[in-house]
Amino acid sequence: MNSGENTKKFDSAVTYSSYLKVDELLQLQSPRSAGPEHDEMLFIIVHQTYELWFKCVLHELSRGQQLLELGDTHAALPVLGRVRTIFKVLVSQVDILETMTPLQFNSFRDRLEAASGFQSVQFRELEAVLGRRDASMVDHLEPNSESQRRVLSAMNRPALFDSVLIYLTKRNHKMPQEVMRRDFSQSYQANELVQESLANTYRTDPEAAMLLERLIDIDEGLQEWRYRHVKMVERTIGMKHGTGGSSGAAYLSSTLFKPVFPDLWAVRSRF
Image (cartoon, rainbow, N blue to C red; front, side):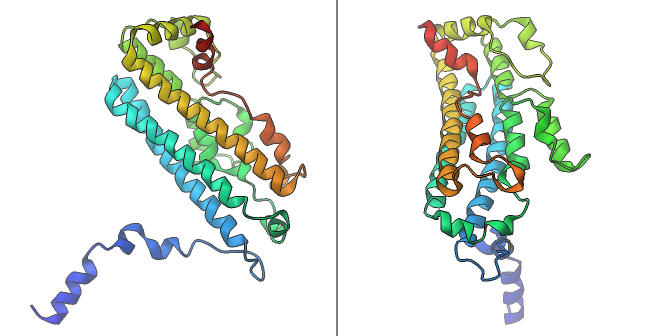
């Protein structure tokens, strides 16, 4: 084989860089500061990384819902466990952001103009997959855009807990029909009969109980991330309004201590 053939074979081989598209990835950080301000690069990379993790969580939850509705406990458990572990990583990224002082952040904050984390389409979609139903979630999205369609689609199909209820009925745990046949475009409301069935599940079905605890892990992980996010914002900008016209820490504080799975928390009082 001549050297030309060797070169051709090498060029067509999959490499670390080509598989991960590293060259393209490293071109996606574009600080807007004239300097640029040193700390803006950190801010961009952390938030881009958040978006990558949101993409991964959405991917995992889609698979998790499929497995739950198939009744496959053993395959669903590691998927749900992975989501919880990702939330731990999201919390740890707050530690990195908090290495930036208020003065350092404000050195480039005005360059963000109307940009705000409130506008994250993937996080809105994630909230919808976890059960949030709020028309205002799409108010800032361009009408008829792909972003708006994604969030609306998630708000009109069964949420993660709906898949859990299907899973439980497949294991002969009775659920009220009004819950199973509910309008998925409406917010789920905590239900006494569901809680009664969940309590029975914990007492009689250890395998299903283990899966329910993975859901509590996810709920707790999201609440932990929200809390750390609020404190990071307060630490960085105090109670000032956020970018993009958001109310900053005041809005974020209003999202605290609102569980994704209220029935799973309420049932603890039954033991």
